[in-house]
Length: 423
Image (cartoon, rainbow, N blue to C red):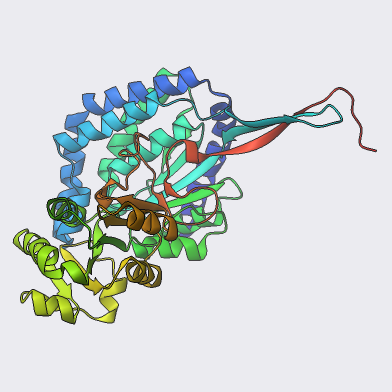
């Protein structure tokens, strides 16, 4: 059997096992799912030494391959991140069971009783890159929503992801749920991803990519099953003329520099012309002092000598690094126009004390997440109270913004009658 046939056989077996496990997960009680998650979280803590050893192996290989510093940061696990991962699983466990919720109910004149009820999606294929914590986040959310997850991490995080999954599966065993409810694709050949995108013979119901533009673009272009994703996060912070200076300084610095490698990091700063000197210069000074490269338009460069010239390409670039594009605008309408022209409908924020300007901004923008006087780095399911997230959706159908357990359900109609027939 050649390599391609071997991969196909492995993936077919994974898909068949997942579909077989889907019924058990669909019928699983809320108590069983909660127990699986709590035991899984405890196992992550108990196996910390094994997980860290696996992560060191991934980091050594990544360093040898010349991986960039931002991607190394995504890959790295430490005690704080491991604890956050375990705590996130526990938070998901504590959420109300999203399955079986009655979303609506009504009666027809003929006596039919109709209910719309939340149900699991089924089998979800999750394809991701460097962040090993996605293994726990995605597995927990899929399990809470009664789904089966087929996880395919990148080759750079395969050791860490496998160690985390091993711990999570202790929870499945303790709760009497099938091992196949959480599966890891161990084969790092790109052909395995291609087979997932084809749907594994109809066994995958949804694909969720979690990674860079290259991965997400490939998934969106090649998938033959539905995809829930965002292609890129060109995130804006707009400092309005009525902004409080200290508030604006804190929000902008955090939005850009807290973690530059996440999709909620600000990539473009818009400044009202009226406050360029009073607010813009101190804000840019803060960013520069923190190690951020400023790329500005003509007005910005005139006010802040350290700024480099911005090109048209900068307004539509997701840097995921300590670089920010800065533009001066005349008012809130000009800011909205810029974001609509160059944004990615991910996350955008306004800093202002003018409630009317804020409501115009929040109401007019067609972004999945809009914020007023808050850092864009809150674009995260954990910060929304979801415990964790499997990604951010920027599409118009099914789910937008952070994708948590509730967003990993669909629904069915349950119709109860008493012998009615249709004339």
